Image (cartoon, each protein chain N blue to C red):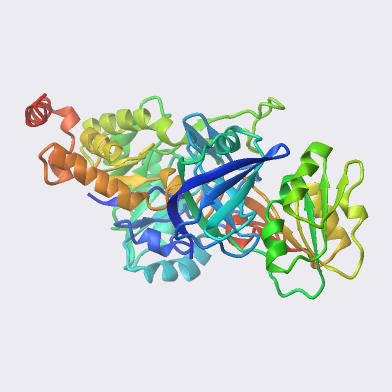
Length: 221
Length: 292
């Protein structure tokens, strides 16, 4: 069940250009891989939606790309500071897959370490735009890593149950290559729990709320 | 005083426990035909608020009455139905269709959505058409962007409105710093959040002075003190909007904060401070109680 709690920051660690924000878990349930939490961004009106990256005992860890004022405020947090955290929210990945292959692009690798842990470390492919960004692959030991201009979609072998998260063009390409793949999408969200209707996303030909229906959706088979 | 949600800021079917923290639930605006809403992106955060351009996404009148309303009735909460349309008949037909639905406590006529083309008919004409077909309490939701909102308030009062809902969002725009193009696909959206509060206070103040009608005050309420300010300007009830996005438990918190604020002023009920901003006598009494 989702809960909202004020949690302490344990550490903020640099991982390439990203930050790993480690929070004291408190009474929050980590949920299923691919589910997300709304994190209070200090000084901003709206919280930010982030999927869980790692769930060590007593912790919740989120991988943050400082791309705007909210994510920069999250990366600027220091140990001992506290923020409100609400979750877990949405629908995560289904884990009843026979031959899983994890595919991540850029900051879209965020939910894959927790997913890999839940699936006993299946094969994984990660793609990044630069060597600096690729430093984040340290969070997913054993993953095959490519850097642009090579794309992860060039390495996907047939016969796998693909579970993917990444930029929209990557997910659309994966959907074309791998019918039935589980894809974790992203959309701007104000609330994360179905109240604001901001995260409209075309599902089955009509606009629906990604926070309620997703963020993990199955590609057409 | 009732604590409500602002229309479009909560889905009671998805979050029933949060809806039950309120004294009543206001639906998303219902139009005669279903609407998918505007293309994404539909929301953008701004320095002191947020913009939305949802575009009245809703299942349409018939499906709302057949599927949504019976499920809302199970919440055992007074339901305020937000009614929208594009001419007076659209509004009146929905109001007529709400007859006999005991769970419906009131109809809020959305006369002020900044994200769709406006109704061709005037606010007073729409209210009069609805008044002719229903005894339900009718609250007219007006826009603070009107150059003389007090005159509109007087006109809808004369047409038979039982109350006012003030205010709706105010049209605004945000640009993407990388492209200098509007963030929202529609270009403009409705501004909500703390930046709206001074406009809400001025509008509630002016419309209360003009009509003395019961007012549901809303616009930038983040705390109990914000709610108290609206009450002092003339609101009988208060609605929470954007704050529910950031803090789903805001209803409980705002109620607690309001209680504490009243205690500090030595007042038992919010009604005792209703419209106190209009009365120099009441203001002086408060000042003496807090030792100012």
